[in-house]
Length: 180
Image (cartoon, rainbow, N blue to C red; front, top):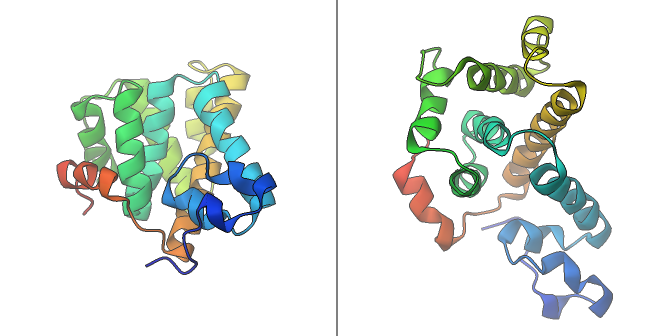
């Protein structure tokens, strides 16, 4: 059970009901601070719908963070979203292989994105990885990649601290792609 109750629109003042318009448990727990919820959601929506970064690469980076954090909520949600944005079964399964230092069938750019996400999860992306990404991503896309990874490193910590549970609709994604 989450450390704070999951709020619904009935629990909120009319001017704050928008923060739970997308009825997921993360939003319902974040509704305790409507201002923070809006700011948090704004960046998340930019990452998902405004970023120039290729959606598949973006989702691979996010799933890499969820995998490393062993966060069922993040992992299940972004496996589902990743599939919607073009990630294949092989892409998703490659995250485990790459995380263990193995060579998956991913193309070199995807492998670099996953490496950058692993490095940032541990602290910061190395100069070598950043420089290796430069020929593939213009400065805007490279910045968007770094912002995406940094944001989701924060998201997994928020989810873990607030103990946000996985909604039943997302459980099948954990069963199909279990965390270690």
